[in-house]
Length: 253
Ligand code: 13P
Image (cartoon, rainbow, N blue to C red):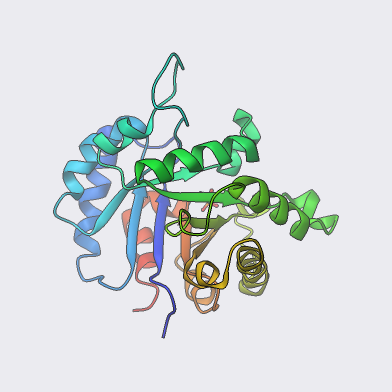
């Protein structure tokens, strides 16, 4: 018996035009019409949000965004606000993905501000954390995760974080085909849950969903989901193909 409802989320990154995203969303909705016990989310590019939201309307698949600015509005060329995402049909927002940290200067500080905006706007935040290969080799995995959690979640109460989802995405496993072993992922997830208990309380630690991300595929999802602290997956490459993604979503069947 699972303690938490699993969530399988697809991060489509900078792939698919509006039409391609709509076509894939239609196919996905058909393929997973029999799935009832797993929550599903897809995060297409900003330009595809509104048309994909139309496709998802009568379906259990939820819509998410890949990023967001923390301000309500303003002179921030190229950015997007929480209310824009909500009006395009989003329920979730991914915050602090390692690609945002690596290429676009995001820090635990910006993650912290964006998290506050998501909470206030009633968007479900998925905060991404994870160590690089260098950090793992230098045995810094736990200290990196500790810092990302501590600074990223700083100043919020357990009550305000009750919808928060954390995605553990080791940078060395993203897009590389090198998945963390289920044991490595479990160890990190257990550590993260322990941090939440230490910094907040056991109620939040027990209810918080922690997703694994990094080269999740139909042939490794089962073993990952068998781990007690893995509550779902944030999938990149394999979420771009409706057949592959639907197999990941049906890990239990
Ligand atoms: P891949 O599944 O392509 O490794 O990407 C993972 C990821 O970054 C999801 O956010």
